[in-house]
Length: 110
Image (cartoon, rainbow, N blue to C red; front, side):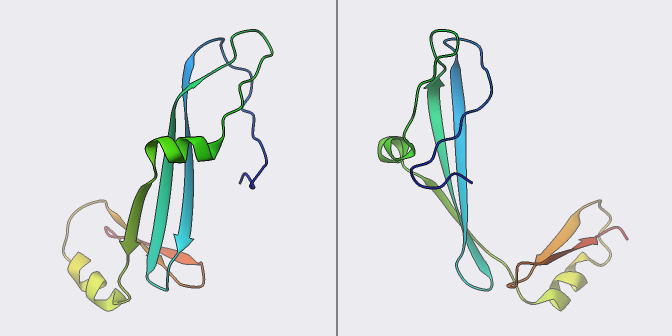
């Protein structure tokens, strides 16, 4: 996490290269919905000389390109979902997310 007004510096990078930074913020909307905001910061240029840094403001990138926002709503009907999975022959996995922040995994093939 990077708090407002704080900085994060990735380790030493090659000089004058284009980089990409990605920031993700996930917010719990209610007991079945989460909202994820993704910010792509690109191109970010590394410093031009050894041990140089270029500071980038997150707000600059939000103003320039905006956020990619996605809302995902889950179902509370686990019984129905379990019935849908019965008989399917695949290696998928179901993850149940609960409002209290816990989750459980259910291998479809098992």
